[in-house]
Length: 284
Ligand SMILES: NC(=O)c1ccc[n+]([C@@H]2O[C@H](COP(=O)([O-])OP(=O)(O)OC[C@H]3O[C@@H](n4cnc5c(N)ncnc54)[C@H](OP(=O)(O)O)[C@@H]3O)[C@@H](O)[C@H]2O)c1
Image (tube, rainbow, N blue to C red):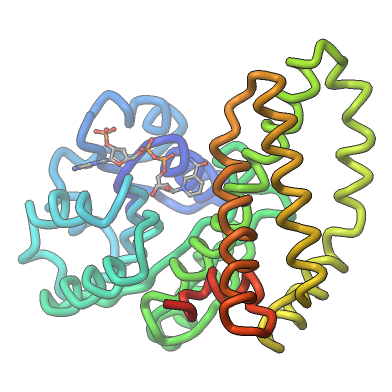
């Protein structure tokens, strides 16, 4: 097994393979970043060519797909017969282009989307999305399973990153949303710890909420005109409260703008236009 790219995630992957007794060869652009895993038993390749020659399976953990060209471009003649598992995050389109690039050079390819923090790779909650040719995944599923459990999504190379990015799309506003709430409490001079149980209480029904929203989305989206009016008014009140407290309300304003637009579109259309229709780009 070769691992190229030794940021926090690449190093965690190397440790997982070493812990499972797998021999690992490593290469990183900044050579000193390999020191810690070499100390644990990984073998340092002096060049990308050496790293590719050392093993059949090459895991990439790089910042983006552009880095893959920079790295593998140094030894592209050595890719024939290799299995490149790119665990870097990027758009599905860049992933598909990267897969084609590897195949044009005789390599085989799998895309991976790592749903974990580096320090939590071994935790049961961690998993990795894979996409690409099923036979390549099946041949290597046991080895890849040493990193974390896997979710194989299908032949389309872009799927692992589509699912990864979609999970992220749900996560980003949620992450900022709780910080926004804490900022409001804090700026009001109250105690974040006193508020916390109420924020947590709102999370208890998250699974049911997601399921209900999925049903609504499949049916065109949530909300009749009354619901949309209520949400738009509620969003306006949150923005007003945030402004009064002096917190940054840019996130809340974005949310408010979506409900305001849904309401305006509904009034124009004479029927409810749910926010889901706006978010999926179905309204001009
Ligand atoms: N960290 C996380 O929590 C996490 C979670 C899930 C997924 N991921 C994904 O996993 C990937 C790696 O994450 P990370 O946190 O380990 O990232 P990172 O710290 O940014 O490490 C990136 C690696 O990419 C290399 N690199 C970047 N540009 C390069 C270039 N042009 N040529 C050669 N090497 C280049 C860096 O080399 P140098 O050392 O020389 O700079 C480093 O080894 C990313 O795509 C990230 O989105 C990360």
